[in-house]
Length: 438
Image (cartoon, rainbow, N blue to C red):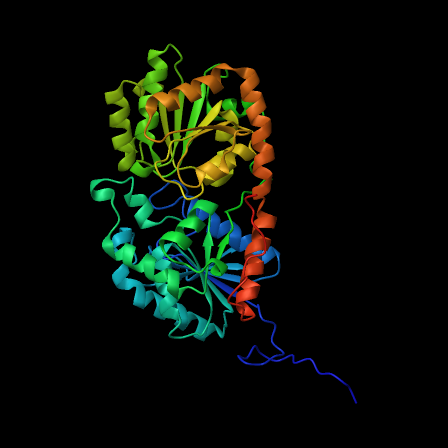
């Protein structure tokens, strides 16, 4: 008679024979990992959710990513990569909506997620919510599942409001929800030590429940490339001085500061070609929406002839843009992490960035130069140092690749998987394995 028995039936809550971590749900309400990068509301968070999910699946954890349906023709389930499904949930009209209009549809979204899981016979051992809207959904899902959830803010309203003005300021509702999530979430992920300190000291999060785990970077995709070949593919002259900006067209990204810095460089007889990746172009290739305002500002500042607005680009095309650049500028007023800076570093390209938020931890002196935010003269001076000094540029480029290696996705995903496993096993303290920033 056998001395042990391994249960081979379905996963049932309460059975000690269950493995503690079998499947996880990622919640990304307002933006899909399938969206084109640089378009409206599609930026670093999209890359994070997509790449994290795929790397967790490679480690053996199946993932379902739930996002709001914005097109009636989108299939309910799309395979993102092996082991990862993106599930479109109907909540409100199936069309793009401003983020601030989505809160009213969150109960419908949560019910749709729970219904999908019930129809498919799925159980999630951990829920990972991204951004405040998704955090509210994770909280609502606790009505249906007694499942731990870990939340990542990506950006925080009170920190964004410290630098935003007028209509760009975040709402009191967002502030309220983000504060509540500190106590409601089972665990929290901070993108950098500064954000962790803010959660602990300003918002009273329990230190044992906050893990500092930065986003990762794909070091195979983002790697040094031949600059002349990259420029030839993009139609850039091999001898012009190119400064690159990549990101959403949002005032917090500081593109206005960069345009003014380009004017300073022009006045100092050190003109650069500024290539802007992000925003929308119409069918004729003309800038539209927020990117049209950038074009108008470039004209007003007097640098329009030397600014190329190329719109949003697929991620697999970004390495050519990085490879073509003499320097990458990240002039953000607030940045939780600065994924663009890390991608540039991985490509061996020097970075000139604002000393703002997570950028102070992401970019060190081996990889680039940090300058005060909102300071066109300082930004211009740093860019001029990099683009006019080949030896400095080569030194920073070599250091940049080395710095980027600590953000390799396999190691980052392993840290997140460890956190998931601790939560699924019932742990509520000592959730974090190690600090990536050291």
